[in-house]
Length: 126
Image 1: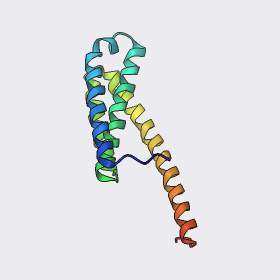
Image 2: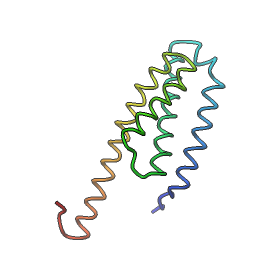
Image 3: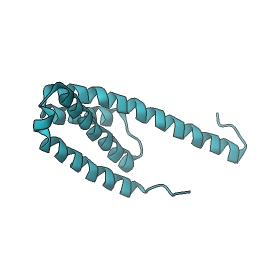
Image 4: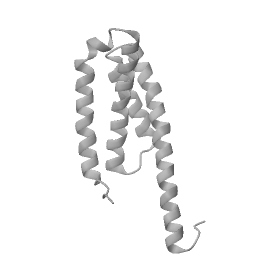
């Protein structure tokens, strides 16, 4: 079984990917302005910035609060809005989708860890 990456490596990788996605978003700004579908795609690419920001914060703090999430959504919307206003709006919508996805994955992992603790100690936690 493969070992889990460390918090430091996760933070570094997410930071590097954030810079790459940010650069690609700015380099491809002409493309993202070219059509309606490309503008929506620009919002999705912007939401990847949100995903990488939350990953970075989670790797450093281990607990992402609502304030950090809202600030990350605002930063993402501001960056995507430099491409097109619709990209800013759709990045918010896609970011909310990422929030639900990350919450779902977190709950699955947490419940699996809790089941493991219950089995290993033989007691139910109240």
